Image 1 (cartoon, protein in one colour):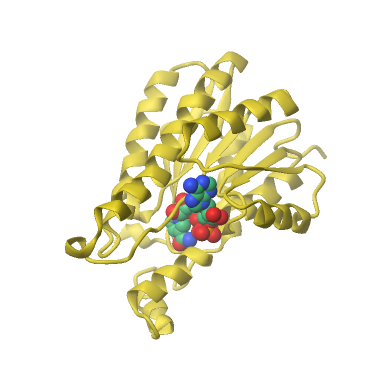
Image 2 (image 1 turned 30 degrees about the horizontal axis):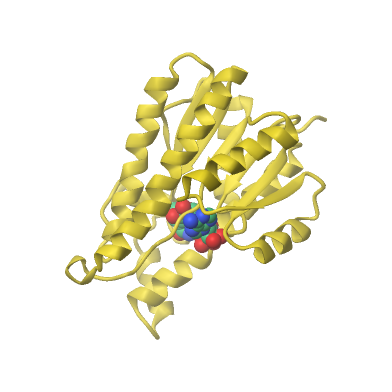
Length: 256
Ligand SMILES: NC(=O)c1ccc[n+]([C@@H]2O[C@H](COP(=O)([O-])OP(=O)(O)OC[C@H]3O[C@@H](n4cnc5c(N)ncnc54)[C@H](O)[C@@H]3O)[C@@H](O)[C@H]2O)c1
């Protein structure tokens, strides 16, 4: 049986991270040609080798740099002939500190990666997909795109901001066949939550995790595979009438 992404070409930023790599593996298993994009060549190589799939490729790029982001998308079209899916998923939690102690440089860096990176993805993917007559752009926001996050103000601001980018892009894309949606995960078992637990309670990470988990009705963190499954839905033609949506993958966390 043909995979749900057979013949499609997908670029995934943050591709060697927890959610990005899980999604890359799932997309490749569903027949896509996948280009993982991340900062470090060696980590990317290991991720692709570990994926064990013929359909996985990689490119090193910093999503906050316009020339690099444009270059990734141009190279993908040159090498693979098209661009059907862009998963704007690279992200950083930034420094964990009260607003009053947050250096402005940390605010700027979080915005550069989490917001400018998504802006650049939209800016350079939309024209390619519009010329092709369709495509799907998926942006990883967060529960922190709906609610505040104490000691993570720049992160929460960045995850709200990408909803504005998504909605504006939907209005510009109109009926061209290009769809744009955001995914809003709760805490997920990846490096990022280990860093947040450590930042919230140095030396008492298990207690921090327990406290965070107590706010999730499902009673646990999600997994990268559970986020990847929603990304697959949004990347595939199963979601052909879905655009402008905000998809929670959060064990009920935002129900409260
Ligand atoms: N883990 C969670 O609990 C959680 C919850 C909600 C949303 N998210 C979001 O999910 C996305 C993926 O995070 P993850 O949980 O897989 O964490 P992760 O740290 O494992 O992965 C993030 C990846 O992004 C890459 N990255 C960072 N800056 C980059 C840049 N400038 N250019 C290119 N790549 C860059 C990192 O190298 C890393 O591989 C992020 O946008 C994050 O904010 C995560």
